[in-house]
Length: 173
Image 1 (cartoon, helix red, strand yellow):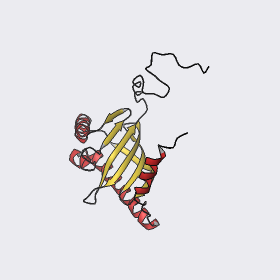
Image 2 (tube, one colour):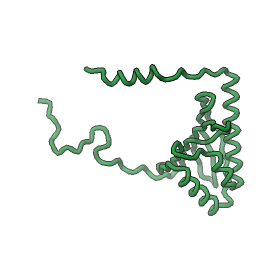
Image 3 (cartoon, one colour):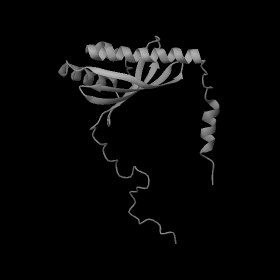
Image 4 (cartoon, helix red, strand yellow):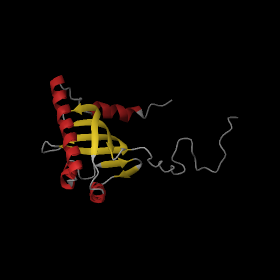
């Protein structure tokens, strides 16, 4: 048995900065800021104020959105989808409550939300990141709802135990 794979892992771990320890009051303050950012986003959604909605999301390559099984990796595509949806559904309102919040450090946290929009149940996870100007932005969001389409089947050869080899598997003899 070789342990070659452990060497890079140990080097990365040794070079990683120590995780930041927050006091309970600091952790509560960050949690309060993330809760307030979620409320601001909900208010913007219900006002159908697209510029204000999109201002609460990161732009650039670090942004990711997953709606059910549809992955969107650019904020520009996400923005056009949000704008189109709100333009064609001007009467939709959202009710969302934070059901869980994890403060990762002073500048990052994860909120899970349960909500409803026009009697459709929504399940949302948002990764919030503090931007350089101190405001909170959604860096990653995953939403799902009952009736989501199933994900596409994986490409052959990409799942464990799958092989593209034409040779029969070894028999163990």
